[in-house]
Amino acid sequence: MSSIRWYGPTLLLLGTLVLAMLVGPGMVRQIAKSYEGAQIEQVRKDLVENPTLLTLSDAFKDVARVVRPSVTSISLLAREPRLGRLEGISNGSGWVYRYFPDFDADPGTYTDYIITNNHVVEDLARGRAEQAVVRFDDGGEYRATIVGTDPKTDIAVLKINRTGLIPAALATDPAVQGEIVFAVGSPFQFEFSMSQGIVSATGRRLHDARINSYENYIQTDAAINPGNSGGPLTNVRGEVIGMNTAIAVEGNPQATFSGLGFAIPIDLTVNVVNQLIENGEVERGYIGVFVNDVDFATKQELGFDGDGVLCEPVPGGPAEKAGMQVGDIVTHVGGKAVGSAEELRIAVSSHPPGSEVPVRVWRDGRVKTLRLQLVEDPREAGAPTQTSRLDNPFESGVASPATAAGLSRFETFTPGLAARLGWAYTPGVLIRLIEDGSSAERFGVQRMSIITAVQGTPIRDLETFAQALGDVDGDTLGLTLKQWNPLGEGRYEAREVQLDTR
Image (tube, rainbow, N blue to C red):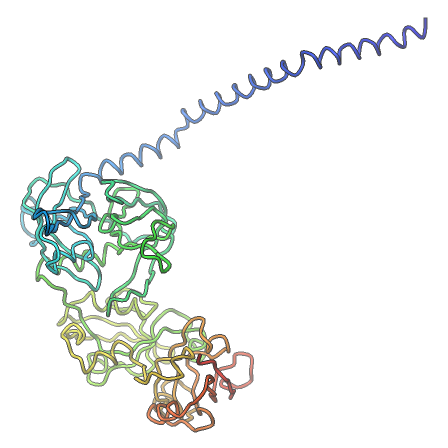
């Protein structure tokens, strides 16, 4: 009896296992599938009822609704020689800008313009295209004429004969890294497309090949492709914060969206657009300074812990006349903070010639405000004798082994400059710029170092420096430097380097 009682449960268990093997897997799968289906249904219900998602989606749809009527597609037409008819040769985007020439006038009196990139309509301005056609979301097409262009900021203004347009709303606050944005335009002729992303960064430069270009781009990962140029970049309120202009191509002119798109900020756009509408051209003020970004070593030497631009006044220029001195650090122009040479340049250029602008400078631990009377920028007026020095203020003018090694923008180190910077004087040439990735950078040469000898030949000034460079033969450049050492007991220490010039 005991043996039967012992085997009975075992047989029952084995039978259950066999039965499970025969019918269990299907039942298990059915149960699992039913459970998964119930879970999916619950998640779907949660999504449908989620007020945050509904609010976000509705907000995105609202942005599209308010922006779309003010966005245009722009096509350039040229006559096809063999067929004798107009054919489309390029396309881009634009947006409606409502301009009040008299802000005290009746708000009901206004004129509408179309804003786009200069490169979108450049063929028309140069006579390579015969017509520009602006097309709206409602299907209306209108022939446009050019009001004015500014290649240095890549901005152009068009005008069409149409009333009742809905202008784009303009943002009053600058773009901020991380905020949600929308790029609208006609990429690859897919008209009135919209993409979404964030502001990846602000204050970007692309080192545009256009001479004297003004660059202060908003970087975004919202999809921007050929055809988006000239279209608006908006915030979550549907306000234009910038104009889509460029993408990073990494040496491939056929490249498309890679998550690196760039837009011109709205404040710069509006400043240029208003001048083009009023005058047909852009006038930029000039204060007359040679500028340099303030790096860590310079801050340590001067005891300066803020943001600003190291300046030297041009003899006889507005800055010198207002009392600016060598070694002054400009921190604000017209109340706007500047932290780089490019920011200073853009801030100054936003004021017209003849205007008086307050400029705040840091000097020997104290802050002073100078009032500068701006004049016309000589580069805009076409003064060839000054252009090279103003564009590259510390350049020696000699194509040389120093350039090949990654060094440029030199300046004679004078007793006066040494006194202004608070350094001990030694004859030589000051290095103002070192190219990223160059031999000089790899060997640890620092900006603001003083070249005292070339291949053993003593250097006193730019002239002796150029002569010594002319005698260099071979693939290396031997320099004797006085260079700041943050870990040493003295501020500057002598060192010798052999730089590759191949």
